[in-house]
Image: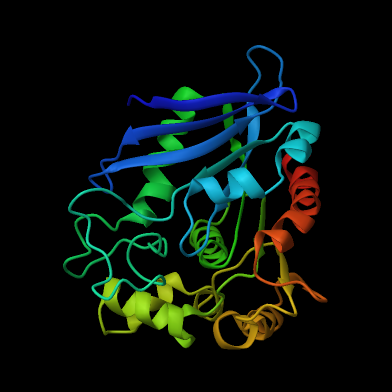
Length: 281
């Protein structure tokens, strides 16, 4: 598989790149961001995947996430894919809503029309992109971690819960933990997967835990001043599910922080240090 280099710049001794390729999953061109820290020739480095939230592209975390210094310190490759297919002919929300359609792929493979042809972000982030990255960059896919924000936190949790053993560590920033129980998720899953709620459970972290999926431990940060805290995020549902399953969860309600990249960038280095402890064992 070939990739096109959109940009590459030096940063913290490493290289921050943006790349584009033709995706067989989405039937569109897809872009992703990837930071490779300085390393010895021939070395293969652990990977931290970052899944972004509603309305975002790869660019939001690349420009505002403040992860490169910590990744350079700990020798971790940081990869941020886009959040949905884009391009001519890709369907969008008919009313132009920001919480569905372009920028809101919700990390599922859509089964309903007109979304099914392009909105296949589950296949893209779990299969196609890892294979592409392994072909072109010095990644060690035996040492992977995953995190994400909001919709991307939902994606990180569900990908990890459905693929036990893939990731040495899992964290999230303000994740949508129970999309089957909140408006953002009900809109997305209902449109992409159809009205039958049973298939939704495979893309709902709380439901997956209730149905027996397990991880060794989770780290989650959420701001207590987040305007979506009560209506969309509902971290107490994850707390309750993990407690019922005997699953280790560190849930930190950060006083005064909101949903923005000011919040994410504040705690990004802490998450990377935590992942590094697991990745570099």
